[in-house]
Image 1 (cartoon, helix red, strand yellow):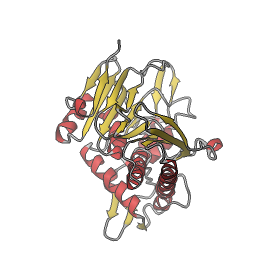
Image 2 (tube, rainbow, N blue to C red; image 1 turned 90 degrees about the vertical axis):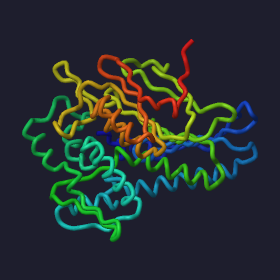
Image 3 (cartoon, one colour; image 1 turned 120 degrees about the vertical axis):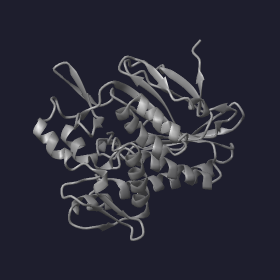
Length: 342
């Protein structure tokens, strides 16, 4: 599973750009700003009237404060966060948590149920064991088997009335790295809309939340070729429906041992990195769902992903398998319009 709420970028914690702007073909202005938050670069780009700089600045500042507050509540890397306290109290007692933790946990549990545990926020112990950024060989089998006993979303007790969260087994840990960025993007988008800004892209470390247009044109993006470092995307597209866009791939974090590449997306049934898939990009009306299902579909594969999309048409996907086969859900055209190469 992906782990996004980390502390891998400490040297960038003070990095930010001042609000900048540029023009569009319709005379509007594109305002953009970025900050390092949630262990990645969070970037907001929005279209507004040319004289709206002060409003854009206030909207961006408020959106970034919203993200910072969510990080303080949802990050297991911050010792004072409610999530860290839940992990410390695993097997001991319930912890009162803020509404953001309730909302994200509820979403995560529903996705875990639908995917039969392919997405599971209790993955933390196995994620730490593999830690592909530092490992040069797979962990011992007995260590894998031991931590797998701590991974089970059914052992999460969420009380939405009392607003408490309990991990039933000592040693369990939760991590929202595979869903929190999408949720933060959703909340940041809500902030922008309260300021009357309805055309924007929020880029959360490569995962996107897109709404509206770039002036008269669609916002455009693309899917990276998993096998090359070329800047030209494998698939380029214009976004035609407000949605979150998230990608999971085996090419970002991995190590090679005895000719085998071991990446960071772990099948929680086997305790080993998933085989047979190179990349999955998920589109969803809810960016938190896009974030989570990108991990789940990478593990589940094409046929299982297709079955879920048939039940939930608010999702769509493009999957690239190990043989470079490209599979698209039938409803993909409701979210994007592919840009044909000349």
